[in-house]
Length: 359
Ligand SMILES: Nc1ncnc2c1ncn2[C@@H]1O[C@H](COP(=O)(O)OP(=O)(O)OP(=O)(O)O)[C@@H](O)[C@H]1O
Image (cartoon, rainbow, N blue to C red; front, top):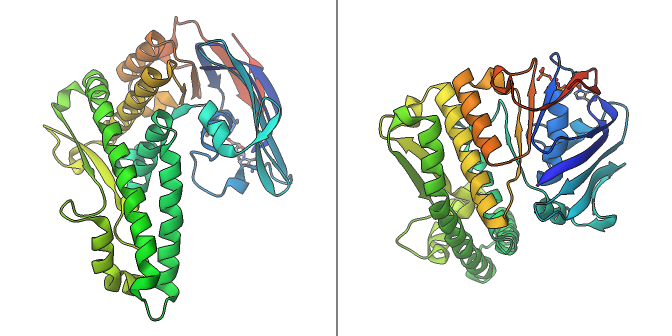
């Protein structure tokens, strides 16, 4: 898929900016604080309904304004064009597809973006939440029904947690229905996550082999969040006393995690910061490739500040892989990355929230 038109209003320093994008490589160059990352943030918002930068979503609103909007014309591989909109009008976020108001989930279904940025090493070195988010995003795009089980699970989890904080006495009658619901939806989520990781593994192996051959064989492990021996409902019942003391549910798919280790780096701590970043990038590229195999088109790929994240040889390897896959790429840098020299690319100069096409 590719973005053809993009318009951003009231997003950080981007007051009102519209651009026409190249189907292949687009580069945004400019000084620090010019607004380059904000452009990628707008694209990411369309596909995730959140920013990849931490902080409240309200921080995206241009200071002094309460309205933000992003419009895009997205062209799919089958030539179907759809018009996407996401905005905040005063208090609420609203999404539109082809002029119709839709649930934000609908927008996220239509548009897929993977983004590698300076915080991406958190996928390898950060909290398990990042890794679950990555996994669930991938499963969702391969299997939309995943969302139903996921919502059921979140609802039951919320109910059990509020019982843990308020139920007195904590009777089996109150807890058992929610624990049964949790176990049932967890089972489905767990199966889908495992099936996804099985599909991901070979793509990840080849992606890693291309970027980090020196680290040897890869081991991808998944922990589902409760013991393999027993049924989750039974474990939740047995754990109730301890969960009451903690005030939250300590077993379930919301505690799952996965990890990547290597033959010559068996502990995560053995990886250099650069290797963590490359591993995270390999994970994203493998996920994008798997998406493409299922959906018949690559997601849009955003690479924020690539030159400061990777050495030149790795930048060239990544750009070559994306070009060969015909993925649309949006890339930022304080100057044109050397890896792009000689390649056809549309270059925009960004300055104080204004964009001007250079090439
Ligand atoms: N809510 C906001 N309203 C107005 N301006 C904002 C808001 N949030 C951030 N800014 C400003 O918008 C600019 C956003 O910069 P952005 O991170 O997009 O720049 P960049 O070109 O990627 O910079 P760098 O190269 O330093 O990463 C900064 O100058 C920042 O101070």
